Every structure is written in structure tokens, then in C-alpha cells.
Length: 186
Ligand SMILES: Cc1cc2nc3c(=O)[nH]c(=O)nc-3n(C[C@H](O)[C@H](O)[C@H](O)COP(=O)(O)O)c2cc1C
Image (cartoon, rainbow, N blue to C red; front, side, top):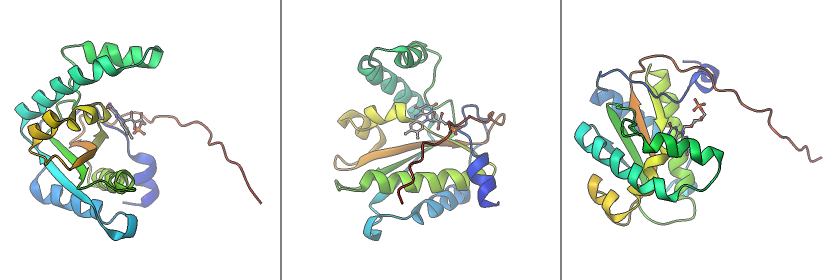
């Protein structure tokens, strides 16, 4: 796929078919992820592949319980509050697969490295006809001792990018962007 087509065509996907993502495809996505630029090429990441739907249901529920009391006041948070209070709302949108990109230790650029890996993974998934969505709602819980235990992550790992992946049920509509604020210096 043409690079522009991937960058401008990728959309966060929130409706998936039941079709599983096969293992060679998962490995292809992770291979693309590790080709991301990363500080001093330390590649401080690890990829946790979760396909167990009962576990995803459990993490979805626990993440909702964790996030709700942390939401600030305000109209945007009120919108999230109403989603997260809905018992039917599944933070992983019943996607067949979650890939959690975690830093394997503390460090000054761990979050940047994992986020760049996540973008490579999401663009490559789009190129393969798959949908993805970064699920920030799960990050708070996944960084607790209970959340790490749920996925079997060692205590020192830092989950940065929880990315759901699957076959899109429908193609999401484009999401508009504001004109960028640009300051030209020199
Ligand atoms: C750090 C981060 C956290 C996000 N968390 C969520 C989330 O919890 N739930 C969700 O539905 N989308 C989440 N998104 C997706 C954004 O809402 C989405 O990227 C944004 O609305 C722009 O739409 P697009 O990805 O289709 O261009 C997240 C995206 C990022 C980068």
C-alpha cells in the first residue's frame, strides 16, 4: 500500500467481525512494529498478544471500574463517564485481539519508543486490511499490580500501548483534523 494511502486512510476502528487474526499476520504486525525508530536502538519493548475473550471481558470490566472515579469534571469527561457507566460498553469493542506494547524497564524514552512501534503496527495493520484502535481506557488499570497480574506481565514492565486489532465490520468515517498551528522560525 502507498504510504499516503496508509497515513490518510487509517482510522480507529470500533466495530469488528468475529474473524480471528491469524498468527503469521500477528507476527507480521509485530515485525513492522520493531522496525520503528527507537532511542539508541535499545528496542526496550515487549508485545503481549491476548486472544482470550473471557480475559478481555474481565480486563474491560476492571478498566472501567478503575477509570470511572479518576475522570475529572467537564463536558468531555462527562461523555466518557456515560460510556464507561454503560454495562454494555466494552472498552475493547469485542475485537478478537489485543496487543499490549510494554516497556521492559524504566527509561527516559520508553513511552516514545513504544508509541512509535504502535504507529508502525497500526499502519501495517491497515495495509493488511485490518482495523486497529489504541485503547487508552485500559492503560490505567494495566499499569496496576492487578492489571499486570491479569496479563501475566512482570511488575517492572510498563504497558504503554494497548492496541486492539481485527477485521473491520464497517469502514469508519474520516475524522477531521484542525488546521495545524505552525510557527515558522527563520
Ligand atoms: C493515546 C491514545 C488513547 C486512545 N484511547 C482510546 C480509547 O480508550 N477508546 C477509543 O475508542 N479510542 C481511543 N483512541 C483513539 C482516538 O480516539 C482516535 O485516534 C482519534 O479520535 C482520532 O481518530 P482516528 O484514529 O480515526 O484518526 C486513543 C488514541 C490514542 C492515540
